[in-house]
Image (cartoon, rainbow, N blue to C red):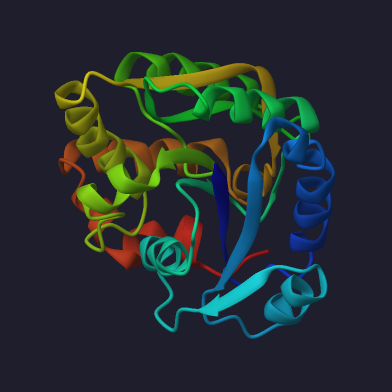
Length: 241
């Protein structure tokens, strides 16, 4: 098996080195399990040293000029050679136990896609409550967060990839389409919980809990239309790092 790890990155020179270092350490034991791997960083029109940092760490770098997370992930996947894809955020640091659990999971013939539990890299008011609710929702809805989203390559291709209509929550919409493929093929979604992924709390830190609540309320009231407007998704696109 060959795993392609795709990392979308827009002006991530500060946090990307730690992510790539953690990734290389975490995947060191893959060869013993008969799993090869590659890292592809999609430079999503960065104005900093993101691409240079990625190349220095041994990653393959591809370029996507349109600043949109869906496009960056799809562009990275198009350059991938693996039979499995793992989409990992540039501000997240997987541990060796998590990657070993992933390797064992994708070796199963009944698994089509999945995600994992998350933990923030710093304590923030309301963050633990938010994460607990997300875990409940992810298990119930069979949703994978974009910070750690693994999927069989042929299923990703069949699904058409991440929708370009969305500027946020594109991974949830893709999860819903993959669930249909999984049911048809009698395969499953898996949510890994034993070794949570450490991910940055910066989006929560940059904005008040009230602003996050208001965004979620607007999304619910508009039937998700806010997710299809870049100007409404400035939490992800305001450039704050």
